[in-house]
Length: 191
View 1 (cartoon, one colour):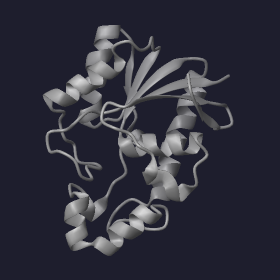
View 2: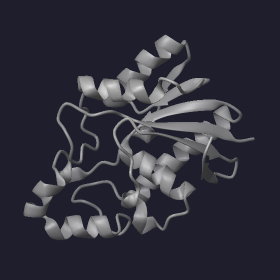
View 3: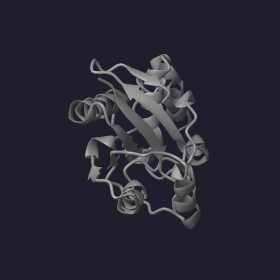
View 4: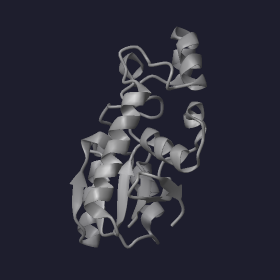
C-alpha cells in the first residue's frame, strides 16, 4: 500500500532569503498568505506532519485546527543545518567563501559547509522519517509541511535525478507538490 504525501514548503520568512537552515524564523504576512493560497483548493488530508520550526509548525497548527485533523511534529524533517553559513545569502558567501559555495552547488553530497550537516546524513535523516511515515500511515493522504531542502531531496529522488543535481530542483515559498511513497521506499511524483 502506498502513502500519498503532499509536500508544502513554508512561505516567506521575516529575516528573508539566504540559507536559513535551523534558524527559527517566523513567517511574514506574505508567507502566511502564500501557504494559505497553496492549500486553499487542496486536500482532504488525514493528518498533517510538520517540521518543528515555527515557519512550518505554526501554519500546521492553524490548518489542523481549521480542518479538524491531527498535527504531529517530526524533527527529522527539519532543514539541512548549514553550520557557519546559516543566515547568509549566496551573494555574501561569494565574497567570503566563493570556492566553498561553488563546490557545494556543484555537488552538495561531496562538500559540506563549514560546521554544517553533511548532505548524506541529511538524506538518511529525511528518508528515515519518510519510511516511518509510510509504516505508520500507509493508505492515507498526509500533508507534510517542511523546507526547501527536504522537498528538493524527495523530489530529486522521485524524478530519478543524479545526486549532484539536488540543488537544481526548484521549490518556491508556498510550493505544493504530490508524491507517492511505496513500501520499499520508492518515490514517484503525482497524485
